Length: 578
Image (cartoon, rainbow, N blue to C red):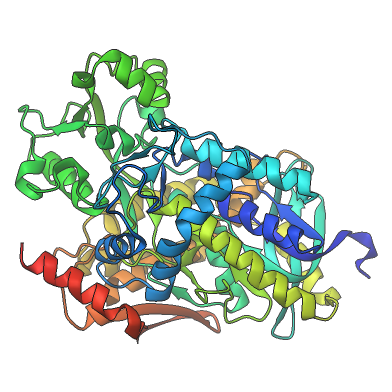
């Protein structure tokens, strides 16, 4: 029976230890539930630490006119009204409380002269709204949540990868995985599971995401029967490092522009004047990324294929105080002193707006007992996320998923795990060893990244997307032969990549198929052959679900909230009058 596998039993298992996972774990643990937090890497290494600029919340500490209503409107306008209206409402209303909660738990924020939490400007936000800690906000958020969670008694399982969710009929009952250090298998029994695994950046060649961003939660949820929404909307952050090659894609925080950084092309022109003369460098990320891409394509790029971002006019003392991480990052990695000379930057795959479809209030998927929060979910950000909304998203919906899963687990029967399901999961992982006619997982991963970057990147068109889908079918056939040599499961990154590839292929296909179906340009999705908005697609999300071995792709009308319609219509009227 299952006695041969290491087994742990909990009320709630949370997969992913970034901001969303930690906040969910704190909520479950506070309710007296036995809570497990599983992280693929070490605790504290989650990608949340790379969110540097701040937490968007209408605290109104710097500009008193700010309100949840304006934050809601900004979020909806940024997402081009495809957002889940209820999620955007909850986010705007609850973000201030989540920031003040962090403060009570010990987070150290930059302060106004009066001692209030300081807030900075960011692209797409009407007011200075981002509570921050220099340019290390994500790190402080993680530090604070970890400290709170560990002292609360959460069980943490580090360097553990989950390869399959386990079900009893339709109901979630746990997860199967392996220890990355020694390759030994492990089973987690649980009444409820929360996915909080982050993003998909490693599907693309140039990304700000760390090695963990391999679409794990998206694929695990999809395989278990959950729906995906808005997968065509991938955010390319306008500013990642472009030189030297070893750090290409590494994030250059939007806080540089929030603090007054100026974008210039090789001719010294402040080119954002052409693309968004009102917002300039603080336009939404999709607009700035496409603008940089266009400047480079038209021959006005920097020597290494990007553009110049200059903050030196703000003075050395100011830059080192406000942007310490950026100062050290460029000094150490590129030998550039940003207090004296401009940075070279270019677009980098940063975030996916699409993900697992969840209930706004509880984080529940359509699979009983399966919940999700954070970047692996879709709906909150519509077609384009505003900077700073990710950290408040993690806090608001991490908490709500914790409440939802906790309430479910409190009334659920004990988990029952079928031996056959565990054996199938084990056989999948051991099956990568010693296959005949082996295919290198590294080679397949490089081919996938190059294809996604060139065919499903910042600009798309039907021919490329159709070819990409055909290529993905070829990649899936190659994946059946992906293998590593017989031998140790200990410290075997090739073996780990074999399983990660399955997740990335699922997610890449979902992105490409949704991008082909959406015949318009909106937010993070730009079609060269359909460059304008389309009224039909402005009212419909694209839903993807598992249909046997196939992927079912269908439009579904966006769910609106009647009480919020006046706010949305007021914002639309304001934008159309400009």
